[in-house]
Image (cartoon, rainbow, N blue to C red; front, side, top):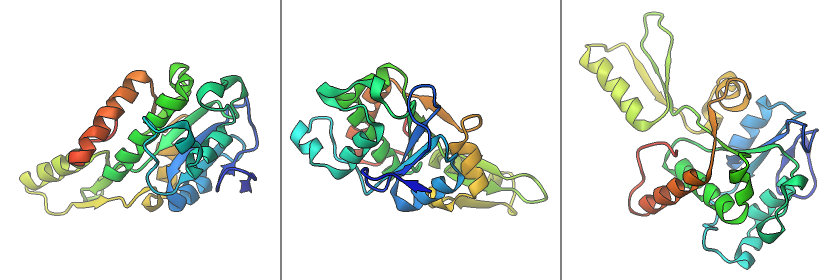
Length: 228
């Protein structure tokens, strides 16, 4: 792994700039960063971990944002400035991908990240340079040699389990993943990291508005659905 001097704990890639295919994964914590770093493409994929939940930068002053180590590490890694100095022609990666756990904390982190980009780096949203990756929430195995089924939210997990119990099945096992670090590396690579097979989509300004609504609802009660 190549660690670039400057941004905190950035695991950088080898290629950068327009036409390079380079992309930056923003993940939750060191465990997730280690797992993603093990399956990434070192030439084109970089990884930057958060340390706890990000600052709510939507209404924060520039001074408060500039004093936040994580956001400054993120800005430094992207290399295009922020706020009034933002210039995507200097962007070191072609896209930024938000890869957080599909639980309430991960949804909260994803909403906070999206609000930061909406407020301070809106051109990434306007030009389709920001994506969200949706990792699996858990796995249900029916037994009898049948392949296991991945589920992507708590409601889906509960619905499939209830359906199997209602059908009289007692041989199935239901497993909730404990973050990205608990995924099998091949599953993580195929569903979250590889460009051709991962479950991701491009974010836009309307998604940022949804994130603000999700964040507001989280203040009262954690939602039981994935972000976006």
